[in-house]
Image (cartoon, rainbow, N blue to C red):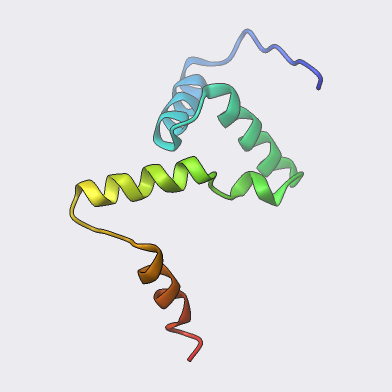
Length: 82
């Protein structure tokens, strides 16, 4: 894999990238790679959340009293299909 170093990012841009990376629970480097992949249309997979992101989201929701079990999600998936 190639390496690209960008040393002179505007402060506002770097702050925005850091903020999104924090929200997504990933590194700044991974956020930049995702953003580039999405912008260039290189990979639809780059738009999909990772398993770790899904787990973190479920944990955050559970901490708020919202429990999304696998069974509930399977049932919800069928709601519009019956």
